[in-house]
Image 1 (tube, rainbow, N blue to C red):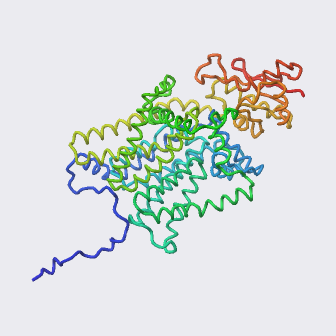
Image 2 (image 1 turned 45 degrees about the vertical axis):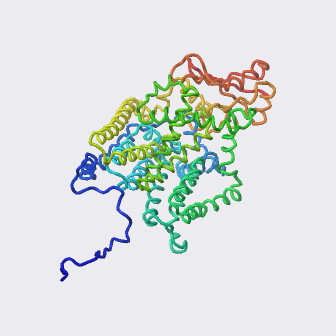
Image 3 (image 1 turned 180 degrees about the horizontal axis):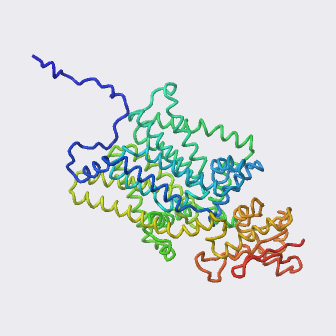
Length: 575
């Protein structure tokens, strides 16, 4: 006779149709070091999370940069937003969404540098929150919390959290995308979605966030390819079509608005043309060849993985990078082969581990980085290119090693935990060091000294920009090497940008300036070595003005000089 207290069959459960439990489950009785560590983190999850958010917020304030960065894009995004508000110029170059968002604050408040920078800080905090919501519980705690801490206190991420580059905003959108896309994956339950009519709402938010990412950063267009590849790997062919359709729901109306309302070039148009050139500052050298793009990929792998990736994490100091030598061809070929093999291995292990969340995140990062390494000119050597993917790459590598070692000896498990600990400590020490350097500068800037923290060459240049705004006639149009920075420090005065040498012929230069209604030229003394005055300066403006002064001395007049060393001079052109 059957025992009524032990009925046959499986009991029904109201949870059967709910999303699957996280990939990682804590065992009741931990038996390995990994399980013990996960158990330790899980028991203290609330306190650890609070501490990480507090540290992130605190260091965001301590590393806050109240002055404009000498990189042109920090000021250029603000100028594009200003032009969008006051001139109706659609900010297509480099992605329009971020300048359009800034314009919503510039319209009522004007160019308020502190306010605009605080926006980046807010985006960083929101992004950190969605990073937590997206990945918490979907990977082992001993992997998640260290990477969460690194993401919260990393000095490079926090530096961009107080700049008006689009990195803080982009990373915020990135983690919001993961949050909603992971929710979609939970609803799909590893299978193709049913009829679109029944579940189209589930696709709209991931589609919107994909659209926002691509509208923020042109290079992000390849993300869509990474997401499609994810569904193809999982044989979810209908889902691959649905995600493209969800993106196009937002993209098609935007393209119509750009073309027929703003009469603007496509957001990929102008920047895409520059990327195709051999030299972005000299169109006469022609367009890049296939072999040229392959060379870019190889050399950018060296720059961004062996150099910038470890710089972002604090393993390479800025001083050591000054002595950095590119790899020779043989070493570089081996290094790129190793990277490709590593990427294939990581993909294989993620597919085998059946962790769809880390798999899609890795494909996302892989699509951005691969495209960036192919199309970006080698001279654009900046840590922010790889920085946006650093947390994802850390999660991927640490998770794969965790999956490999979870059934291994305590020795291997301890080795992985020690390596993760080293990354955490190095990152934290790097941030603490930069905090100490930044505090005196921040204090001076907030107390009204807007030039403190710049080297004399930039200080004199920016003071000259302010002098032009205050002292020249309103119709004066000044040619400047860093026109967006001059625009900010000149309190909204427009300057004529000079990014490359147009000609060295005096007659051609005079005609060029006259055609563009330029009647003043600023000659700065920007250091060739930013950290030391060696006497060598960037010569762009010199080559764009000296031929006129040498050939027609009566057509130029020195108007004003700023500084006594590393001076900036202002000349009037008399036509």
